[in-house]
Length: 215
Image (cartoon, rainbow, N blue to C red; front, side, top):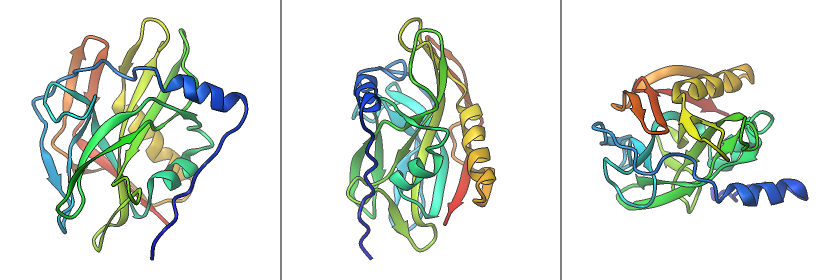
């Protein structure tokens, strides 16, 4: 059955802060990887295993590795709502290339963060992606499902740097597991294991994605 998208509204000062956050660069543009590739999930559904800093598929234009898959009854705003007690602030947008049953398209998402950006603080940040028309993929194997990337932002207003995709993946896994959702940490190999430093972009991804079943 068609699903109406859930629109979450915030008011007052929070809205003003969220608008300001959109202009922030969330990572170093043009991070690179030798591990960029497409992944198939059956029934024509495909994704690239990284998101991108702009709508160009290129190994020197990646942002973060895909590290999570939410499935069964998941869509973008539902994941944000479930995580909202801890991940409550809006982040800047990046781009994701996906194929929904034979049709390649771009999706954008700013994701959600654990705190507001500042010169001294840090916040965990994950972005959730799916076909933009519905906010989810669907096939008989995974049901309604979406993908996510993860990292940590440090000192965004000053000497910014970004790291710890594994730590945020673990944090989201624990958040959902503690809420009673069946979660399998590092369940599937996504071919995007990467470590090392590229300017302010510090890689720490073991190549395995966490699967979380949403009811």
